Image (cartoon, rainbow, N blue to C red; front, side):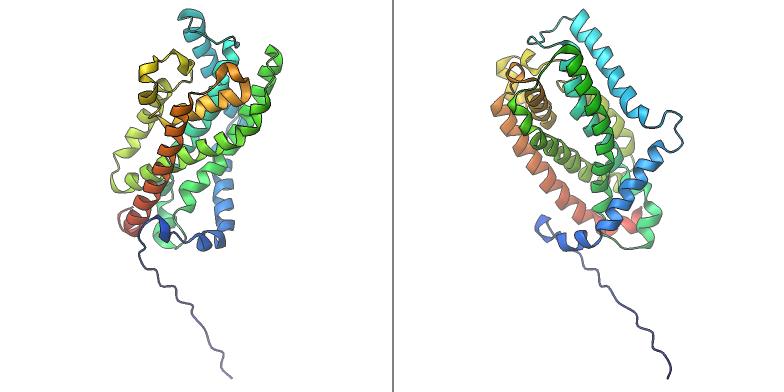
Length: 279
């Protein structure tokens, strides 16, 4: 009896809006999600002479430069906290955000050959960058722990809220990455704008200084940068009440993050139908 070959068909129809994201399909492709995340980690460090040490060198250098410039030269207030610890507690979330944003924004273009040949949920690529960024975050966090021990800084009970602010940083990165990764496919000029956004964001975010130096009348306006609430939250969790966040600004950061992720997902879903054609 002749054997029969069966071909399984998959009909892909365009979907609209954030509510139509197929989370069940994303779960089915979870192995690909983890594979891509692991591949990104290996590519980043495989042929580097110093390997994972690069994850520590950059944030430590940023801490040293900002401590000298803002702490020693400008003599900005430190709220009774050793300036290296004050700075590094902000470098921790900023480094995570900047690394994952840069990788997720370029994820679609970098995997053009894969996108044009096979089907899989495209959301996996920018989302997978978050997992890769967790490695750098873990290494940087260990350095911060040793730095706090060296200066005798003991965290308070607020440290239990740290996972919330980590998730907030991840969602800010994801929402921005969804926007930029989709725009980068359609408009290739975006890849030149991404480094500028990261460098500019470093100086308008309270990384090298405490956000308390911002005049009270401008604090709400300053909080329109979602990373302000994230950084202030990290400092509060790790350094206690001396670095308490500006609560109205934190609420604004949370709200803007939700809007950023929702609109980013909608735009990404709307644009992904043309990815294979224009990439």
